[in-house]
Structure formats: C-alpha cells, structure tokens
Length: 220
Image (cartoon, rainbow, N blue to C red):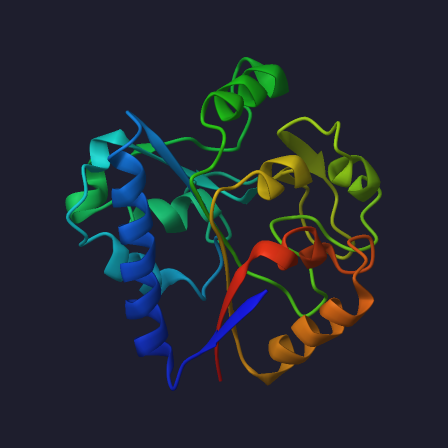
C-alpha cells in the first residue's frame, strides 16, 4: 500500500484527476479501448468535475460504477446518476457508460457486458468506516461468494443495514485492475484503513482485497 496525504480536499482531487487522466492516456496508446471503474457517493464528485475536463479520446473509454444500488438512475442514491451528472459531461460526454443494473437480459447479460470491459485499466474505490469497498460489506450473506476466486464479475449483494440490495463488482475483477486507487477523507477512515491493514482479512475488512497493491489518497 502506498499512502499519499494531501493538505486539503481540493488539492487531492486535482492531483488524483491528473493521475487518472495520465493513466488512461497511457493505456490508450496501447489499447483500442480502456476501462475505468469508479465509486458513487458524495466524496468523489469534485474528482469527476476535474476529470471530465481532461483531454482524452473519451470515445474509447468505458466507464463502470464499482457498484450500484438497485434504484432508478434518477434516484438520489443512484451511483449511475451521480457519475453521469458529474463525469459524463463536457469532454467526457463521449465515454461509453456500462451500468450495473440488470436489463431485460438479466444478470447473464449484465455479466457478459462487464466481462467484455475487463480487465479494468484503472480502478478507483471509496471505503466506508466499516472497511467495505464497492458493495463488499462485512457481514453480507453473499460476501464469501463475492470474494471467491471463482466469483462471476458481478453479483447481487445484500448489505446489512442498508435500505436496498446492490450489484457489485466482485473480488476477482477488483484484484485484476491494472491500477488501483482508494479515495478517503477524515480521521475515522484513516483509522479504519490502519485497522484493516492490521486485520489483513478481507472477510472482516473487505478493503484488504486490494490494499496490498493500491495507492491510497487521503486528506482530513
């Protein structure tokens, strides 16, 4: 794990946006299509505001959420809605979005769409105070299956205490990313990160699934 600490939120978002744009641009030199998976929630919004202004060939970039709540895209809790509003605008409007809500072809169709976008060139994750990433939550009844090396690329999962079920990228997909970044803020999440490193058990701290090879970006 590499840890980069920043003096403030604005500087962290600008710096990380530049890193992500550079990684995508480098990948586009070697591949016809590249893929980036991104978290929802409120924290990464300013990152997407900066990243969407990057001069990339966005038409060759596939954008996936790391997970999705099973709500409509216009629901306030929809990761798809937030990513579309904050990232897929301006120069980035030409990127291809691959949503994680099953369509008429069900989970089989969704699995195939995600599989075609793999491996992820770039992965950005948030982390909760409970050390969850994507929708890999401690205590979820499907967690063991989602952490398995034989897990399909996407699974439905039922996070404890959450108001709706979710679809999440699974451990093999997250571990297969070519570059992984974890974005966190505040003292509580810094403490949770340190606790996860001590536990070193993805069943108790799912962030351990990717922590060894990740770069963590943190500010108070």
